[in-house]
Image (cartoon, rainbow, N blue to C red):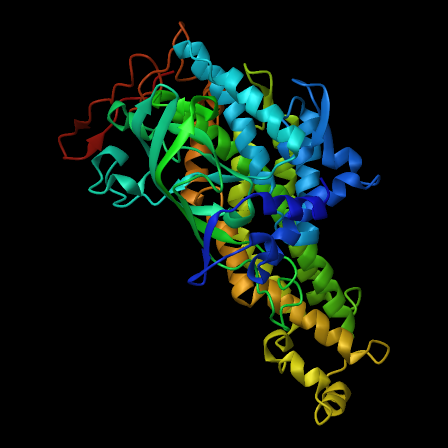
Length: 515
């Protein structure tokens, strides 16, 4: 599809959607959702441009068809590199194009269904392949319904007072299942074609009904979407987010029927954890590309603002230093994404998984450095970005001339250009939208604690310890087993502390040192 085709395709659905307390009659025609639809549309149009075809399309090995990169199953390290670059491309144009979440979920389910079948003799993988090829042929965009409302965080899903804070199976029928519950944070929820319902945590045997993965059309009976506007539609000062933005929604499932062919996990609780962590790795890898695209926006806007202010980074060292810091932050976490692609691992399902350590380090860096990125943009731009009068004054005949005369910077750059880039930086970093970019960078794909756990779980720290021990020639038995690390334990038997002798004068004396 093209962006226009995508927008029109939404008319074939009639989801129950509420935005700002009002029912939405037509998602495709709703002004409050237009920036989100525009952002997703970029992923469609770029696939038709010859300059970007290599990044934005791929051959699907299981069908031998060319598909959009955003719904492709990665088969090689090159696929991962191209996906990373594709996400960076679409996000530097749109801020956040959202559709890469479809890719991340599809890749995780592809892996998890194969493992579940191998362990339980189920046919989930074949069901999923049929579904995958169908949505690839129709070029759909899928919303990831993963983060449950969760309720009391100290209790597991099966121990909640209200079970509907997690999506779960309530009934099994010969032709499918019935599900209930709430997903609290669903990116782009109103203008998706379908939802991929996925578990958001590991489960125990008692939580088996909550170990669930399935595909549900956005307008399936019993589905309600309560969403916020996408971006800042209709605001004159929103130079960027009036055109491109992202809606998020709470999605409530009330006794929704899902036929068996759309069910990819139904109670196999020990595999739900793998599905969750697999998605997290794919998604954090993609997030690296997304925030690198946002970094491109900040670097470009910062450079224009420095120029409009009449400063030269070659002569003004503090400005150069700040811009280099912004470059270093952005390209450092992007380099982690490149490393995760290069050091990928082949999965038993036939796809590839980005290296989890580099994926999580990159995501942890961007999650915590996003605030530094904003700070640097503020530093190189100056306070004007939040002190400008509203854009209506740009067209007020009583004030326009005087503002243009005093708010200009370099004489060869019109004041209007300086004011425009000032408002762009405000929109990206100091507005409601700017705060939103910070929060999705910090918590999107999991909190920093989740990344730290995955880094520690996957990093071969004992290999480093054994390396140093071998260099020091201590701590390893002949059979290559580790020994206790008690203080003073430098050999198998341990050290004997020599006795202290006392002379007749009461002074302490030590035996001579051993040769």
